[in-house]
Length: 206
Image 1: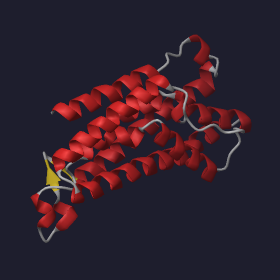
Image 2 (image 1 turned 180 degrees about the vertical axis):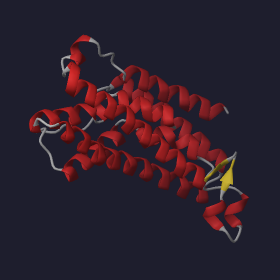
Image 3 (image 1 turned 45 degrees about the horizontal axis):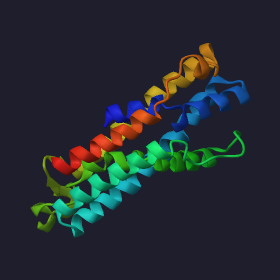
């Protein structure tokens, strides 16, 4: 989960480029740092939507069916990202409020499948024999993953993303400039799409 978060943090489309833009507009390093909060909140909300969906389906659906459905969804989304790598929300301006930045982060994370990628980790957290116990969801678990562990995983994911995105944003703002995207940047879209297909395949056959 932390590694996936770090990978997201490297991607300029997931937030650090927006943070740099706001810093340049306000000519303030503090503006770069302030932008990370709304970006993190929006990203976390995207993950929570998927987590709620997975846990809810886990209560209503056979775990084997849920595994198959998640695997197919991951592979299909990976193929979609290969075919349409630039399919994501677009904004007409770069100066935004904190609320707008949080909304943008939520939409971007959702469009890039950030929550969908963590679904295999969460599958089973809402299923299993413990659901029928008096402790309910608090103790529901399967395959070693529990709801508290899933919550920690989500926090680690976003924490790693913000740490990496913040470090990259500050380096770009204070030292390299946005021209670094033309000189050094490696497109991560193909790798991200391949990760979906690989994860979906592993979900189907493990």
